[in-house]
Image (cartoon, rainbow, N blue to C red; front, side, top):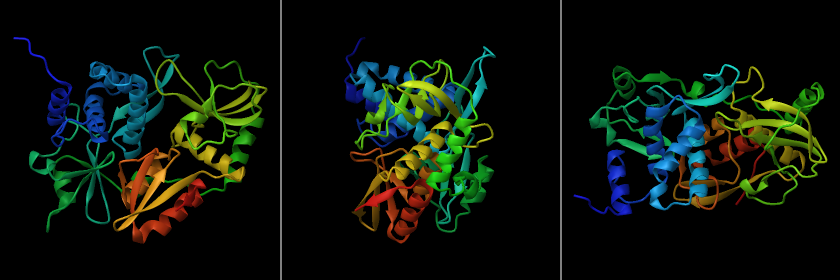
Length: 355
């Protein structure tokens, strides 16, 4: 017997299967849980494969495909940032001449927070949350992060180890770089450019236009057209995520190009690029700003520019990531940590706050 099923019923059923609270919303929790489930089945694969597979499976739900793809790309970035997905560069595909950026599902792991809570990371091939059933209802989601709070007298760390979860130290999970001045970051990139020969033609190149006076991150990505100077750039590749770099242009033509990440770097290309762009904006005396608003017992930090994964992990650990409102991402920071986190954002990423 054929039966017409409503959109809300489909979403409600999917939420139940993903272990989410009842409802008919495709909120951020829905996308994070769905991408984890899909990653357990598809990884290793390119980030684009995850995005296209998830978007394709929801095509019949009358969603805006362009906006959905952008949203899913942000969700994949968030899962990489918290450590559920591991991103590797220069992965060899079936064609050994082709190198790609792929994501791998992290093995079930955990990080102990000083409060005694545990951050749950990774997934199993057949289960996005490979915890004993009695523990699953205790997991609290904070944006892309999953946190397991201990019960009184419980040895949570020992129990997780016994269940097969791999412990990670907080420092290893954070992996922040050393602080460096904006001038030093850009001087180092300019030195690398100067040592290179002319770059060849790069199709579909996009530059992050620092001359545009807008707060919109996406609006500043444009095709080079008569631009002169040095810019953060990105370009698509046949397999994997976009390639990032730092380039010099003359009248819109590419002259030299440094690809990110540079050999030996432990950080993602996009993370290197975002930090470099923040340094460029700071040197232009118009640093990127974030909004600080009052919350019960803390402050909300609203970000309008992407954060490298190490900064996002720190804010998600000191406080927690919450639903964003007319910005790229938001964090709830406890009052006793606000000044320290503002100092961190300024020292490491040259960000200025506005209240």
